[in-house]
Amino acid sequence: MKSPILSVLLALAAIVTGNAYAQSFDHSHTELTDLLKKHVSWKGQTGASAGASAVNYAGMKQDRAALGVYTKTLSSVSQADYNRWSRAQKQAFLINAYNAYTLELIVGKYPNLKSIKDLGSVISSPWSKRLYPLLGKLRSLDDIEHVLLRGAADFNEPRIHFAVNCASIGCPALRPEAYVAQHLAAQLEDQTRKFMQDRSRNRFARAQETLYVSRIFDWYRGDFEKGHLDARTLPAFLARYAGSLGLSVAEKQALIDGDLDIEFTEYDWSLNDRK
Image 1: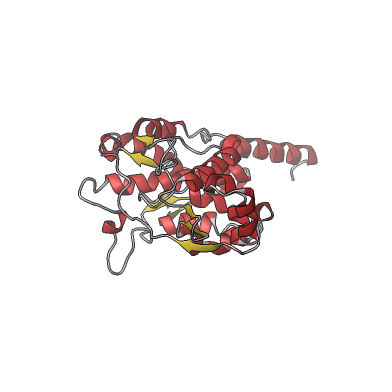
Image 2 (image 1 turned 135 degrees about the vertical axis):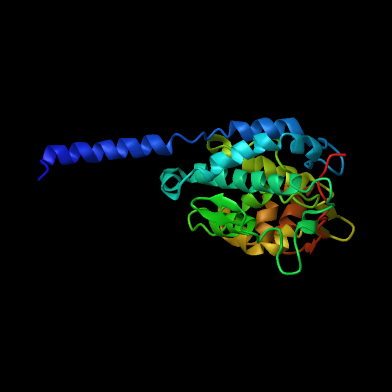
């Protein structure tokens, strides 16, 4: 029979070992940041495309081996390790995984595609294919976004829609750096504001008193109405970014009061390639 002291010491050793193992993963995601800085760039700070980015897929394809090294580090994380992490570490990990696996998917066929949709079929979309070993299972991009990110009861973070990138022009920008836990809130807020400022996706037609916004707000409207930052309606969420949308104070109030029409723009599935 173990002595009480020995039992306590063994328990403490297990905790220390478990914590050390959980902390061995590089939460700075340096390898991914290096690749994104090298191959992703903002289109500009002003004009219709402000807030959009483009990817040098030809260059990323040349660095495919380095991208593979990074995704293997993602695959090495067990569910038990993941469970020990903070909320922000989990979210950053999943967002980066989604973006890195999407890049792998594209460069695997590049340049012989014009859209990520070209990689699907009549019976299977590119997002539904379980190709990615993550947290002990083969996952699809849909699993990562809709089950692990959107489906996590304790996340309630609609701004992830401006962080995960579907390799398309209509999608919010791929950020030229990885997401990291210590800066995640600021990165998500910056992504959201940049997306709202992109007039190719979101614009206010003053003469028609109509706010045209990305179809993302239609597809995932419920996520924006779950009370994040006290926004329980889509107009209330959009009103938080009235300045980025180009609305005056009076127009912001009209949006909140339901006096502005909201229309959803068409989504451009063309590859977000930097030519």
